Image (cartoon, rainbow, N blue to C red):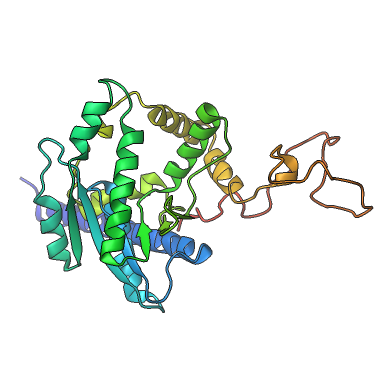
Length: 309
């Protein structure tokens, strides 16, 4: 049996441990708010009077997005509304009561759109083949229509920094394109603005935040069941880099916003054909004869938007 002194010491240790956990959780929340706020500001994602339709899938990222946007709405110097939208794709065993119950507790306006895209995808895509492309196209068209019906001026998606980088590598490795996933874009139909407020947020942070907040996660029986997707291969590669070469992934992400078209080969982005000498000194010009082609990054570049409190 423990002595009173031992019991007191154990209680003190437990209290300190809990204080540390609370401190770390608060720090995580502050970091997410800061990074989301910075992305919104950098790309002018949300403006006065906007009605932001937050697409809620039931995954950790969209839950985190909704939660942080609700926090920022209370602090923002502008007024904007939020409506949460879930597309119930009629997947087998989908727990359709979870999201309505969660959103009603939050007291936030929401809309559940019921469309059986699951059957369409399963009918058209052979067993074992990737369903993501068709599933994504079907979802996109439905969400655009719902945005119109709800009068939403912005469509917010829960893609984070790692999603953006994975898409960049997928396009480069398998599509032969330097193309990523932009933080803000015009929709395919030209009628909507799509935003990704988690653009500066690491997936590891949304994973931790989901645990802290105990979000009621709903797995996807379509994409979640396909273990050999190319995206998962890229994700594994990035995680290996993060372990072996700290800072590499951060540098790659920073490079997406520091592009030199004159040093690539896209003739549509830079007019190589008419390039002529003009006698002007260009500090960012040719380094073809330099011994070291990779200059040391300017201070702060590595941690651009990714600094940890």
